Length: 214
Image (cartoon, rainbow, N blue to C red; front, side, top):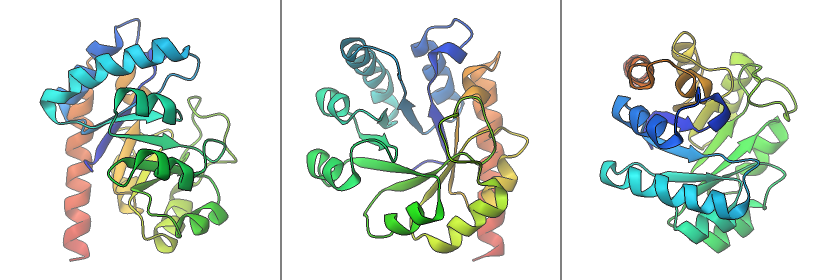
């Protein structure tokens, strides 16, 4: 998995077409895209997912569907991201198969420990900092909480929630393997430049961490 993960949000995209935002983000260095459409009817969600999948294909960037295993199956997406109130992970894995990328959100230590029994591809540690894009969560982990998850989990960690170029380095140093963002890219005046700045920051932080812990 790449180190910069885009979660889409049509409402935060400054009126620009979603395809335009996604394409610019990928050109700037985004390596995985999650299509999130909380309120879209199923048909519109499927049609949007098909368009985004075609757009990403030449770049080899995986398409992840938020919450909806049925939509992921319908468009043959690369995977799905599920929360604690969505389809249970074992059933999602059974339906999507071993090759699918499946991420699972964790909001408490108990959920982190429970996920140790699962062969998830990553844990979405959510949210790191308070953010208006994630209001249905137990509370923010903070950097200390993220470091705790890192000690407890064998899985790759994707951090999300209030993240941007100013705090990405500290989040990587606390234990994240990947940074997921919404508004830091979707609401940027220059999407490609915002993604490129984030990607450079993340890559440098991962490099430094590897050197410190060879």
